[in-house]
Length: 491
Length: 101
Image 1 (tube, rainbow over the protein chains, first blue to last red):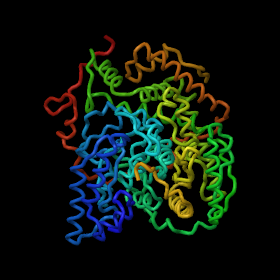
Image 2: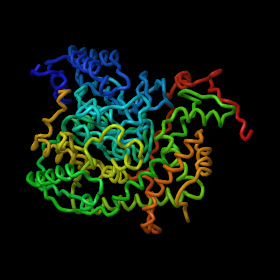
Image 3: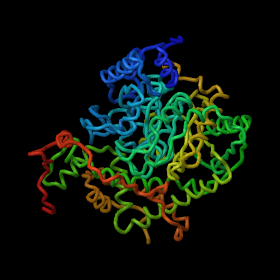
Image 4: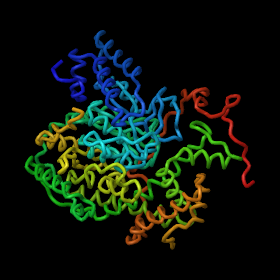
């Protein structure tokens, strides 16, 4: 061992140490499981810990090494999975009572790929029910807390994965991002989060929320670690017709490339956003200066329709969700509440199974798609989505990467926004446009608020240009001290 | 097309029936208020003229790829049925369909 506690090792370090024989995969797995057992009661990051499975996978990695067999890119690396990803033989709830007790008969493709690379899957993480939310308070199984401050949210919907990574229970985790659900919790927890290009990562085995937006991606404590995970999960999957047949470049090689001459655009309209916290404004301005000092060519760009992203998203995503969630009817899986006939059985099963926010979005989506309103709401939103997409196309004619805040505020207090859906939705105001345009984005730590809470910088690139994100984010990370800040109580 | 500025309780009940969601009276009232607030917000899109804009259904244009027509293993029947609340003779058992009674 190179010294220091095991939980501080990142993804690449762990894989290297295990491959070198400096530490066994079983030791690493035991340390992770012990930390979760000792500390997660207060954090609520995990919904299920698969200690037995993790130790068996770790032992298999150690056996392979002992036999001199080749080890994967993630050999012995503990990884946590958002509970929206199906895991064979391990409960998967999507944070909802509607799937309580369900044990999937198959693994999601991303899970299959992690296993094949030697990752040790330690458990399933807490999330807003059906990935709908920005605080993990919509989980049917209790809130998750932010390791930087336990009375604050880790963000959402992938709050458990972000909290588990920031608290160093695991060096990395997978989340999913429909409108910001990887980037916003990464920002609020002071770690790195990547939303890949739509179509870059298979959605097979991901419990669908909004199928034209959902993407899985990594959380990690460094840019290079995130790059390694994305390299493993990215790529075409014939089980997902929307995953693209396109080679996967080396994202790790992109980390360490020279950022000089990269054209970086700062979005002019960002400053006009009413909810932008002064500490975030300040941190992002400093980060942009730092990028310039690293040799990036910074200029202003305009995304004139981006501020309509919130309205578009809250029509498009609920519409898709209302259709996707029709499958939860108590017939084939999940608890059933029997009524007088089929229709009332559906209605009672779904009323009991879905929480308040999910019911609200099903209602909104059903309304937006219903006869007489389709053109006024859903079709209109799809047209404005085109305008947002075209804004990005124009901007990417002038710059290589767009930069701005990930979240308008640092982590807010638990309970602060639950009674006002619109104020909660505003937490995603800066992440939604890239989701609607289908382009990739990364959040990387870039500052600290007066209260010591992390602030995240969002970088956005054109479709399938994730390498630019890794190059710039890595250069920025290496040139600043934010990578060395960790929540004290968990480090 | 004109659209309503808000959604009333009768409309909430109609949509809940379409969505197969049982709502109690209190939730119908709350839902009417909250949905009206959200619809009020999304009405901001009405400031845009989009009559000549093509809608985007998927951000990344794609063609539907076809795989070779070769049979392969899917889920086994017992695996597919394992999580069902009620099964009989290798099938899902569902309540009697009796609409409108």
